[in-house]
Image (cartoon, rainbow over all chains, first blue to last red; front, side, top):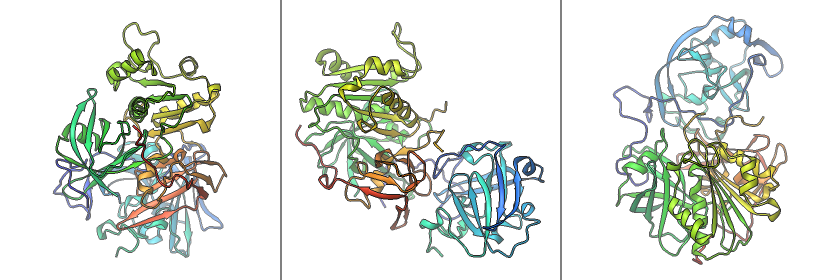
Length: 200
Length: 243
Length: 100
């Protein structure tokens, strides 16, 4: 650790609220990206569920927005150590989107416009654990925060909540995504502080 | 890898920018245009790292100057420009960079283009030229929001008016001084054509500032005939002002 | 697929992090993008640094050139996005200019 800088505390503040280990509370909403913000027009937007070979389900923006939605309030935990609590979103549950999908796959690779990917077990996508969100705080989701639509899986670190989501590939064998392939934990449970590969 | 610098002097350049003089006992020198990474660590172990260009010219002393502009939403710059005191210590890594540098052996005409706080590494180049008594011809196009935001004004005026060693053109983008011949506005092709070295003289160009400024300025320099390999760039983070 | 938002820095910004691995100054190195073949100085790469790691992208096609992640005491580096990096051995490291 470096020498302590007198009087420096960074943007975060102290809190009594229970946060996952190593996290700091923030009130703003940092924009962190691995690449340029894609600009996808709604008339070209598409979300697909495929198995690597066949497209199992497909929605364009119109049909996606006809799906039943939910309003959720969730906490966000970023692996870069900031947490933002009580955020409000509107989105479609993955339970809804996977409802008619018959698969014996165990894993999913979530894919974004651009080249970002993240992987997680299919079980983590279901049972009220994941959404495709298109509104934040009552307004259309801004491109810098993942709009038109982003994946949200709040029980895992925020890098798993892929911005600019375009589809999910169902897989029989796990395949690491963008950050999982370079040192980040395959699962990413913030409460067990699974930040990096090798963490228990 | 990380050295320690002690703050020996602080000087406010403008209402939002401060020059910090650091004594770094194991400093072995630098090139004009290089930067350092500064690391701050809070008592709970939280740390933040930011890059700052060295404003001072290379010399044989163990002191360097950094000029820091305070960003409205910044996490580190408010601390460096308001909280940091003489006697405090900073961790630094560097000097860093070997491309965006001006060496005193260079003799070709030099075109400097600064956007806002992008003037800092270019000022190191100007200061280096002066202290080395170089005969290289320097021109500076300095784009800035308003007169109060100009850094190093007195020094630039002295060089431009008395010494004639550096020719300076100010381009005000939001508020210009009274009776200024050019109305406020961003740099454009006309300004490049009228105030920068003609490209047929094959100047080496150094462009520094926020990313959007650098992309615009580089495009204009390309369009006026400067080839890409004669243009060196350094992009700073956004100013925090969203257009 | 060029960026419409100027939310990137450039290779100069990543040079400090990369100095953990590269003994020579990397900003002046020439790199060839493995995707589109463009050859440019690393200083010109588009850098995304605020996220979980450092990502350098080709200024022409935006494909990933290089990624770096700090994992506790380890550094992970992926350079598959570059066909090569070529550095000038005559400038072994960024030298200082002491003729003032």
